[in-house]
Structures are given as structure tokens and as C-alpha cells.
Image 1 (tube, rainbow, N blue to C red):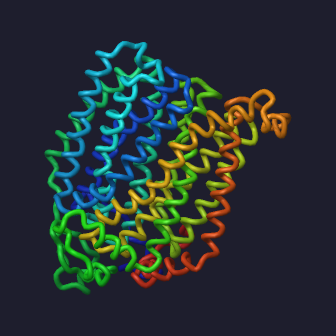
Image 2 (cartoon, rainbow, N blue to C red):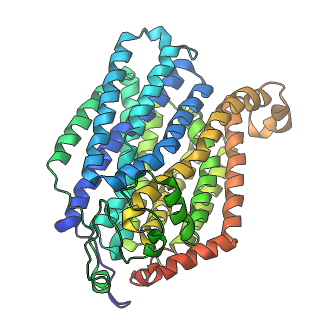
Image 3 (cartoon, one colour):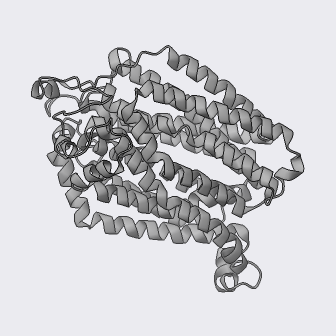
Length: 493
């Protein structure tokens, strides 16, 4: 372990297990690009075909319901099986579903896809969302692979690289989806997805992934048996092991009850997940309406290119995390980042301008890698490795469970209540239309203002809460504060 006078350990992605992690990171990025290209593209395509905000809200809701409903099960698969096998089966499932979707797309008359009430349209959309969600086991496995392959004293930096790759994926995704939809609807999207997924499976088949955890020198000294099996593991002396001792082992299936006991046994962990759940509850409005709002300001090609440019800032944010780490107080950093993001998203809709939208999204993209890396680093520190798949899956399910409610409600609410209110002689148009503007786009903007204000208020309340202090203390007791003291002067946080 380095002392406070020495630089914090840096990642070495050129050799050993960290090189394997780099390959897996790239593999995950490639598959994520294609899965999320399908999601972005079908949202763009359905809105352009039907001009229905209701339809785009339903697409977001379908995705989020499926994500929330499968997270715990996917997490159990990650814990019970070798990580590479889970990743391969995940990509294979997506490939098979996209193949069925391609056949359906080619056999269905174009007119059916332009009718929002068409059963062919919704069968096609649901199947595409199944293919996208089938890729989620990879996203659950990735943070456990950080624990598996990267020593604890540099995992925050590895999590920063995950954020960098996520940003790069979004950049490529938005550009590809916008251009492909404009050029050939969903046909080119599905053909490219099938090709890339097959190539990624061939690459991963050649990669040897060790299934024993890498420890730091200090951890190895504290534990005479440093290799903790990744599959069917029992025991371990790392932080959180006492909580895990009361729960069944990873060979016991999904084990929701044991996972719940583990989450409750780590002080402050449940409030962290609950806070993220509430954030997603109000954030579902953005997922349901953002594309419709952006496409009301610019063309689909420009919207895709704009998201690509903004995603470059997510890469910058991830690289900053990889460079400076998260500092001594990652929980505080997580809340401050949320406060800044909600402030930006509350202010940008006040003007009907793509410039204010771009500035707000730039703030969001730059800061989100810090928030995501902070949450992952805390979980990796306080949860035993052999249970991390379940806990990450549990967190994914709980955090995403709130968003479908918002996504399913916000589309119809905006379409049938807010839009009429902000149009013509509606109450909203008469009250604020003179300075705020009227019509569908301004109705969506009003929803964004309200949601941003609620998110900011919730974050300020969380900063003042005893649960925040409990989580910070839990992280410090687990050894996180000691590791963070190794960060160079000027670290974030």
C-alpha cells in the first residue's frame, strides 16, 4: 500500500489480470453499443413513424420493467456461473432475438408500423426490448469483474474507466442510431447488430478469464488464503464478510431473502439504493420524453450527432475519475454530483433552445461518471465478492423499479393532460404561455422543470440526513477511507 507521500497506484492494463479486464471492458463496450443502438434507434424510428409521445413513453417503460424484473435473477447467474460464460450466453440470446426481429421487420407491411395501435408494431418493439435486456447480465458482471481482476487500491480508477467506456459507447450509439434510422429505418440497425455481436462472441471465446480474485499486498497479508473462488465461494475475510456469513452461499440460487439480509446488514447500504431508486423514479420522465423534446428542436440526424458530441464529455469525466480517483468521501461526492445535475436539468427547459439543452446535458455527462464510479466503489468495498452479483442485480432491480411507473405514466400524462393544458386556451397556456411558450414541446419542457426541482430538493434532503452520515461511516469502517488517503492531493471529493 502506498503512503500519503507516494502517488496512488496506477492501473497497468498491459499485463496480468488487469490486461484481461481491459479486454472484457472492450468486449462489453462493443456489445453495449449494439444493444443500446437498437434501443435508441427503435425510439427514434417509432416517434418518426407515429409522431406519438405516448409510444416513446411505452418503449421506455417496457425496457425499465424488463430491467427491474430480471436484475436479481441475472445477478444470481453472475454469482453462480463463470463470468465469461454468462457474457457469452447473454450475447447469444441477444443475437437470436435480433434475428427473429429482422425476419418480422422484413415480413411486416410498412403501414402496420405507422399505426400506434398495430399489434405488429408492439410485437416488434417488445421483441427488440427483450434482445436489449438480454444484454444486462454483462452490465451486472462488469463491476464484479473489477473486484475479481483489479486490486482494491485502484478499483475506483478502474470504475472510472468503466465510465469512460460507457461514454464512448453512448457517443458511438447515438451517432450510429441516428444515421442508420435516417438511412434505412430499422433494417440497417439489425443487420449491423447481428454482425457485431457474432464478432464479439468470437473474440471473447479466445480470452482466458481467471476465476480467482486478485488481492492487494495488504489484503494478502491479512488473509493467508488470498484466492477467493468466484463460483460457489464461501468464507472470506474482507469487508462485509460478517454480513455474508448469515446468508446462504452463491450456490443457493436466486436467494432474494439472503440478499435482502445482506443489504440490510451493511449500515447505510439500503439508503444508498433507496436514494438511487427515487432518483430513477423522477428520472423516468427524462427517459420517456427527452427524445421527443430533442426531436422537436432538431432533425434526427442532428439529434444523434448532438448526443454523440455530448457523450464525449462522459469520456472526459470517466478519464478524470481514472486519473484522480474519488477522494476520501465518495458518498458525499455522489450527492453533490446529483445536486449539480438536477439543477442543470431544472434550468435548461426555461428557454426553448437547443443551446440551453446542450449546456445542461454537458454538465450531466461530465459529472455522471463520478456518481456511477462512487456507487460502484462503495458496493465493491462493503459487499463480499461472492455475493456481489446478487447485490448489484438487486440494486439494479430496485433502482430501476421506480422508473417504469414514471415512464408509463409520464407519456400519457404529458400527451393527454399537460399538452392540452399548454395548447390554445388551456389553463397552462393562459397562465404562463406568454413567457414560457405553448405547444407540445413547451409542455414537455414544463414537465422537465418540475421534475428537476423535485430531484434537487430530494438531493438536498439526503445531504442533511442521518442515513447519509451512516453510509459514510460504514464506508470508512470498511477500509474505504484508508484506501482513499492514498489519492494524490487535489483528488475529487
